[in-house]
Amino acid sequence: MNILITGGNGQLGKDCEQVFKKRHTTVCVDIDDLDITDPDHADAFVKKIRPDIIINCAAFTQVDACETQKEAAENVNVIGPKNLAKSAKKNNSLLVHISTDYVFDGEKELPGSYIETDTPTPLSYYGITKREGELSVMHHTSNHIILRTAWLYGFYGHNFLKAILKKAMNQPEAKIKIVNDQFGTPTWSFRLALQIEHLINNKGQGLYHASSEGFCSWYDFAEYFLERLNIDCNISPCTTDEYPTPAARPKCSILENRRLKTDGLNRMKHWQKDLDEYIHQYGNQLILECRK
Image: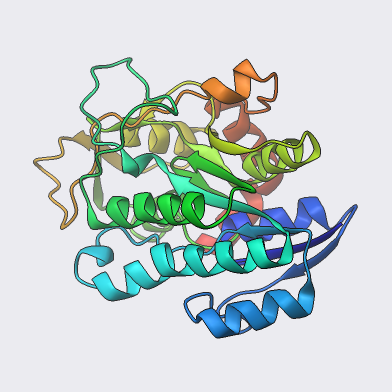
């Protein structure tokens, strides 16, 4: 197949390229190659490439920045997916679009989790735009897969783990506070890329949740990661109130992969198992990268 991947410089875009280029022709692009917020550019690019599948990994994911850069967030997270959906329909392409657990308000009590039929009620502007992006895709093309995922990390690009590791290594005496009352599921971008491939191969359609199994807090996530890397540092748990941010975060945004399991298509693993494999593959490189 001929596959177009947008957001190609990000962690998921890079992993999707690694997964799909083994068997398919892949065109992996980012903003310098394709401005998805420009409908004419998007239309002309898709018409030229004529992809069988478009995997949209492009997104404005800086949750706090979305609160002040609302136009940019809307352009990338809403207008972009709408343009791709329209172009995909014209070209008879399948559109795979990535969304987020932040479309939910997180008011469920632990260990409650959200399934695909739960009503989205986002707290932040980021969550609002991602939900509107979902609706745009649904409205403009019926041939789509929408995947809600959570707490993504990978080897490429920026993420929570790299930020914590860099601070721990370069400021070993600093006291690092990490929120311990927000719960979700860390998800390895490479595992998600494999799940996307499996869904495409099995002709999946519609909305799915696709995060790792199990759940933890941000503090649990960081502690497990740093312990496995044998990094000594001074991290301590704190509450959301002790670590205020411009954008509100859901307290409990655990996703249940209900549809994947019902359809016999779930390939997601427990978050600790995936994190162990991630560290085994990339641990030494991460340490070298973050020791700067």
